[in-house]
Amino acid sequence: MELTGKRLLVLDDEFLIGLELERIAEECGAKSVHVVSTVAELLFWVQSGQPCDIAILEVQARGASSFEAAMLLQRQGTPIVFATAYDQQRSGITGFANVPVVLKPYGKTQILQAVAAAFSKPSPMPQETNEDDISGKFV
Image 1 (cartoon, one colour):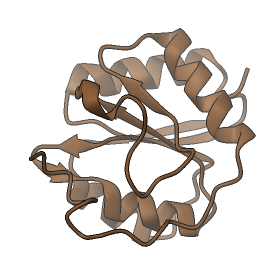
Image 2 (cartoon, rainbow, N blue to C red; image 1 turned 45 degrees about the vertical axis):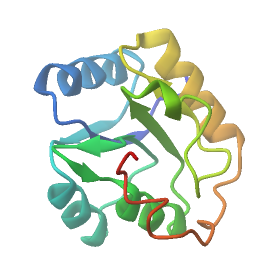
Image 3 (cartoon, rainbow, N blue to C red; image 1 turned 90 degrees about the vertical axis):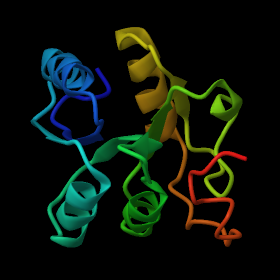
C-alpha cells in the first residue's frame, strides 16, 4: 500500500471526513496521521518542522485557502494531494502543476490513486503565480 509506514498530514474542516481519512490511512498501514481543521493550525504545524511524508489538503477550509501551506510543503519536498468540493478544480489547481486533485465526496480508491500519483511525480517548486490565482477565491 502507498501509505505503509508513512506520516500523513490532513487538512479538512469537516470532522467526519478527517476521521474517515485517518481510518483509511491507518487501515493502509500509515505510521501516523495528523489531522487539522483550520489553515492556521496547518501553517503552525508546517512551520514547526514536524515531519510528514505526504499531505492531503482541502483547498478551502473554513473560508481560508490552503495554498500558502501547500507551497511551504512543496518547498520541503512533501508530496501533496488537494481535495475540493468544487468541480471546476477537478483538472488541477493554478500554480500547482502535477498535484493530484480529488473531488469530494471521494472514497478510499480515489484517495489511494491520488496518493500513488503524488508519490510518482517529483514535488516541483511552486510556480510563480498571481496572488489572485492562489487566493482560493472564486470569481
